[in-house]
Amino acid sequence: MKNEIDSRTILSVYEYIQKHGEVTSEGKLYGGITAFSDIDGYTIYFKGSGVLMRYGFHNTYHLDYEHDKHKEDFLVKIESLKKQLESDK
Image (tube, rainbow, N blue to C red):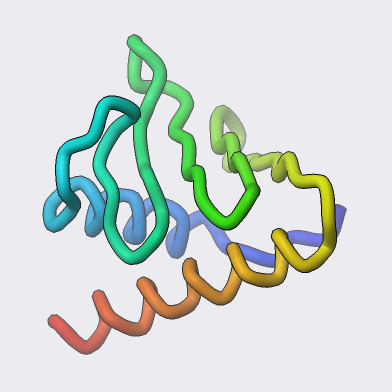
């Protein structure tokens, strides 16, 4: 799989959601993306637009989705959050 999202983006968007997101039963929700981690904090997850993204060791990630449209929508949301956090600096 081609790396469509760089590690810096993943981690900074995760932190942004953790800081600004609304608490839900699954994690923190912001901008249509829910962010959470496993119990030990080594793996982080994003969930939204029909996609579950798992990011872990060695700066690798995996996207689970049924339709390409879900993936496209998810990537747009991640990019939008990245732009928002950059404008907040």
